[in-house]
Image (cartoon, rainbow, N blue to C red):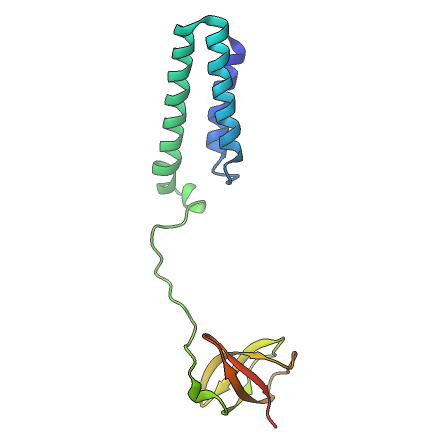
Length: 155
């Protein structure tokens, strides 16, 4: 009976530890341990004890999951592990347009091969087809994709 109780308790501990090592592996191991405990109770002690161990295992797993997903995220400790339900962030990209093709600008960062170019007092993310370019170089826009300009050295 000690092995059965040990498997159930250790399975419950693994369910709680799942928060620290996400991925489901500990949960699967915990489920396997609890199923093994139920099987051992059925084979060694009969149907009544098997059902009791099964109900206890399911109850412990349900309580552990409830605590983990409903109560833990509201605690100071849990807030370190859970993403908030909503985000108030915004994207930083500027949509580029075909009007910028042919315009000249200055590299305000090094390009290796991506960097930031200043065109008409606006900053844009750009990609250098020529590889590494240094800050301060004069550049020309030759093409664009959805979020960045394609540039090369000004001729």
